[in-house]
Length: 310
Image (cartoon, rainbow, N blue to C red; front, side, top):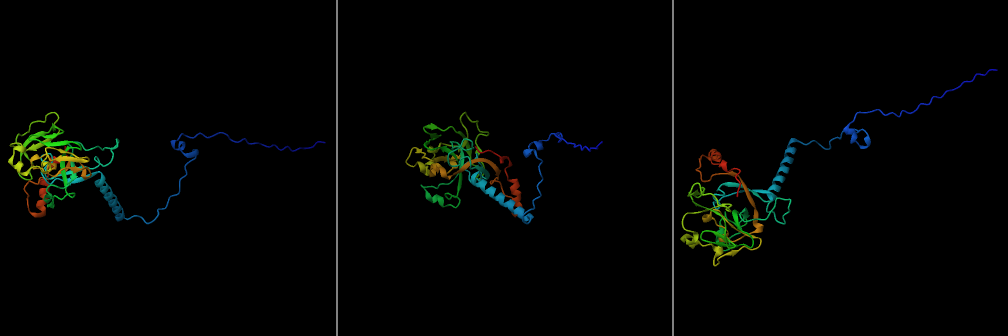
């Protein structure tokens, strides 16, 4: 007897182990675990939107803070009102002062800082005249509040002596380029007797100006006024953390010869360059605000802009 058997065949499906090739992508290479980056849902802004006036206000506050920081630690603007540094610095020059270069404390090798050296032109707070305190009663010459600009002649430990034709530091004549010049008017630059003046000799790094005539110690006017800081002394020794300074206009500069030394803590910084210069000796147009505006353009010494001070 024949029997019919039903045979069930089971088909086994093998898993597909083939991987589909995808084009190379740098974005997929740096994605974590090789997974596709999921887009995050947009974040709703928190709080009300800023108004235009609020944005302007915040920008102004940030600007003021940065300006105050810069004026406190990096640079400062000063105006030169007197002629003690003519013709190196003119009356009416507006200078930018580098306050960072002489910052107090130990200088680090990777920062643009260094010690004050002979020949530097520094801006400092006027320390006052201990020999003639009555000269400090002027409103434009108050100690601490008035800024002076002079050249460093003596550093701590130096011996300073004023000779008939030279300044002597530690017994040797200071190599300065002496130029004979006369004053034209109170605010005008000095007029050199020889124009152009003779060139500098080797070692002479800066110019100083003297009036024509006999040396100071043979001049009767000098004998009457006398250098009060040297009264009864042939030479001065610069004390620690102090400096002996003089103006380049040697016959019209009230400096360390008269009131002594500049303490280190009163030094503001080093004069860098002229950012604007106004000729105060030029005649004024008159006519109120319009005349003043015309004078601003007419009397500006454009050639002085950007002049390095050295």
